Image 1 (tube, rainbow over the protein chains, first blue to last red):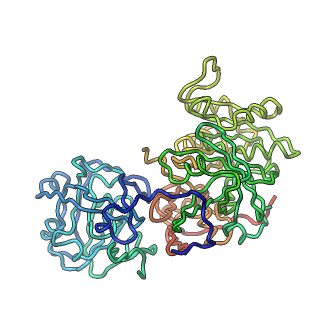
Image 2: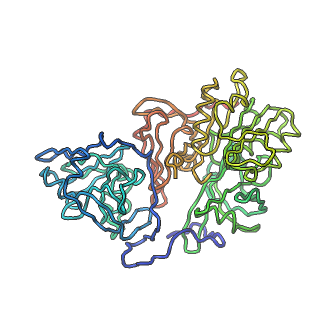
Image 3: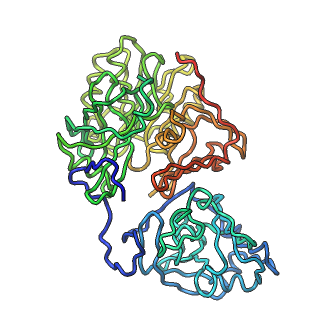
Length: 205
Length: 250
Length: 92
């Protein structure tokens, strides 16, 4: 890490907590006891009777669920570690939601990638390989409570083996596509895939 | 002043703390000597960069509190309990310490005496800081521009620069300092005791037909509310300048 | 925490924009590519807590400018800006 001028601020330590469970932290990450809210815009608000989730694009069968229909799908309670590209990590977070396997198998994807479209004009791209076989969910519960709006409620993606910006908040539509297309942050210099164990933070990493 | 080398403003310059002043229980002013300082306009801000021993760096922006006529560059920092930087600047930093500073930055939210008036300054909490730079510069300039400051604080003890604002109000007939205390008021308080609202601004602000210049600075809610009210009172939109501070107060 | 309080304005992005453009940008005017409203950059809405600095139209909220700092380089993406008009040259 470059220090530009060798200028040290006497007595300044910064906030970083010591890496407690070092083996569970990817390179460059620090533990955070809280749950920081990082925001690229205002918190979208949507009434549950207006909410829907769609799967379309390169699929055999387009899907659409209302909130009630979505909640009726088989649920899981994943317990995962999450890692944000801004270097904080949180271990053993608990969620409730629907596996992407359940969501996608009904659509029968033809393409190999997807773009997650979210309220607030946010998008992110993922490979189907990264969101199937028990690796991803759309979650609506966190720590036993309904997911708060500032954390992505009513529902967000959860793809814990990638940096947390891929776990797109306020997800509303999964568009299956043939080519991997950069989303909101990916087109602004961040990595297309974002594997924290390979420290794939930025494009070119 | 504005013509200082841009490259100078973009690069980090060493700054030495030459004075530390406790303004309130949570707010402290730091005055720096910056040998390479190109000068500034009231309302501009600086970036402060801190480096830990392991090379970790972080930076924050702070409005400049001092007038351009002052040979030192001063900021006023409000301590946020969970903050990463403000507790260090308020509790740790001592005279003689050196930090890195970059600036001045900002062209939109600035005022010098040549811009004229009459002036309406609306501040909330630490939003008073850039407005204070304007007031201090105004006091030192030869031009008399009428000014009204409406300053919202939680309590009497939270009023930053309170004594200096009292002096300005007493010494200068063309200045008017109006406080509102939103959370609690001392016994005998005859001033406003609520958040800034339309009725308050209608009573305090210079009339729109005088073509005033308004500067509003503070938390987002106060800034957006006051800007909307002033528009409703007939102020010209290009003559309402706003600067929102985040929850950290800047 | 009130999410509204996290919204800043163009003044908060002034330093970053100066690194790209080499001069003050907050008095420059942008036209929103989405809704065509024109505002000084100092008036635009800035969200700066996280992976980058997002600058949104003060009228419609669409993203105009994205600024990131990656490996010591400031990067800017401006497809949300239709036109940028520099501030007037004449000084008082």
